[in-house]
Image (cartoon, rainbow, N blue to C red; front, side, top):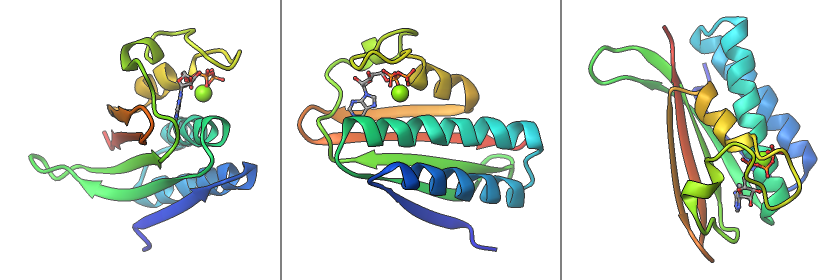
Length: 135
Ligand SMILES: Nc1ncnc2c1ncn2[C@@H]1O[C@H](COP(=O)(O)OP(=O)(O)OP(=O)(O)O)[C@@H](O)[C@H]1O
Ligand SMILES: [Mg+2]
């Protein structure tokens, strides 16, 4: 089983590829169809942000095992060297957008996944790390 993949997001095809790879890996890990849909939606939102707000970036998918209880999960990392995010607190408020979008993407990803972390430096880029665990 291929337990890691990295998909380049430079155009909309990348979003499609990342969604497909995420569905396949989450299915292989053992997630049910509802969780597969949650994970795929989260990947879509992260990939769409890379496509909209940066030149290029990557979605990295890895199957992971939790230290304390051996539970399996999927880690989704979205990485780019785009403009970065000025105020991390603002972007986590439902409805905050700089593009006329719904501003629902990042708060939605946080709700869909179990762990969520953003690191961003204006001018340097953004790395968003999320994990979902099997229950
Ligand atoms: N990778 C990124 N690099 C730079 N800025 C980003 C990135 N991702 C998100 N942002 C900023 O965070 C804001 C909020 O993102 P979010 O995905 O929550 O909403 P949106 O993309 O504006 O709308 P929606 O996703 O609902 O269509 C964006 O408007 C954008 O300014
Ligand atoms: Mg968005």
